[in-house]
Length: 285
Image (cartoon, rainbow, N blue to C red):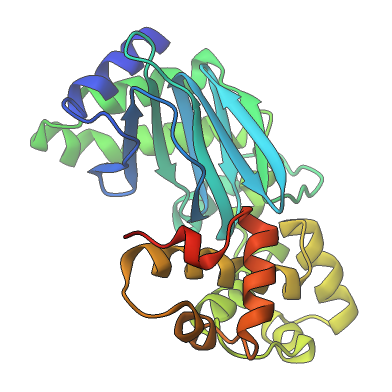
């Protein structure tokens, strides 16, 4: 099944040679590249990414998560990460299909699955079973047939979610679908941080937004993201800064100020510590 999945990704993404995600269907993206890529900052969303060939490396708070052919990664929240296609060649390209995990799609299935001890984590990696790969391949087969997509995709997506819920990472996927669960509450706080990157954080306000006491919020936030809220905001700011430096003509000092840094020198130190280069060196000519 992996060979067919790789062939389908390459067919739909023909002509691309660098890692660049293409939306194949709503909530479904594919990516392929023929050479290893440089580490690239981004924000992961609640999703499952299944690798058909090659190797992907994703860093969260400096911790690497590697997943290769026949493995998948579940991201449970919006998280600032650094991604890289670590192994890719013309004969063995890096190929991956990603599906966004929507709480509204997961929730109806929760009554059909047995309760499991709560599991929290920002990123987790597992081996993909044949039972999971089968509906993913079927989804890819019909991706460019509009009538089949309209009629069959909802059922196939439901089957994929079912396989995730009943698989090794089912406890984590289950948390994504709980409207009043801890992950949903942490996700609300993360959305505020992302919408307000330049604002000073007040843990008490974020805890109130999440419906928790400050101490409980701090503990659960760290369990879910591997970072404190302050560390999370700093990484998010630095990721945004790197994107702005490569896409805008504004000065590094201006970008730092827009993202909430009062001191350009502190911004430079944090940036160099995070990426191993200065903002000036990282600017695209």
